[in-house]
Image (cartoon, rainbow, N blue to C red; front, side, top):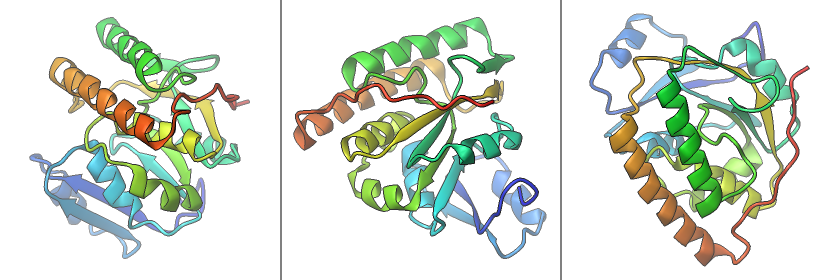
Length: 219
């Protein structure tokens, strides 16, 4: 990472994992600027919020540990001067590599559901690679309540409501067959989470549906 951008801190957040990820990281004896944060299992959203609460940098990269979006895309994400920058797997220049057709179709169905229920304007909310400004983090964290996989939906919706600029960067994304997402069970839970997000947004403001914003395409 230091060859791509200036790194201040790296936080690995372990959400009560049952594999040997934490032990493996500790065996690598990371430098002091790399910290491992552990917490009981609550879900992706809770883990991301916990990690963001420890970050002090002007801009923070949030990414899955499997690096499904290669670090080589970080410069394009950083070049997008927005409060929230999201990598997307849809649109001109985006590629999904190795993803089964059924997995892609489930993702598209969920996105249609999100656009209908909570937030129009983003063809992909769930790609696990985003950059968030420190100003946005401080403003948004108290508003974010979702513990599970639908956390990304609430993050983007609240960012729009608060007036932050959200930009998209189409990327190449590699499917990981060892993903912890359980398509049916987690998909149903995400649908319920989106309903709860919609209710919270309606309580927050009557203008809970976001407008389309421009996308930033990699050159």
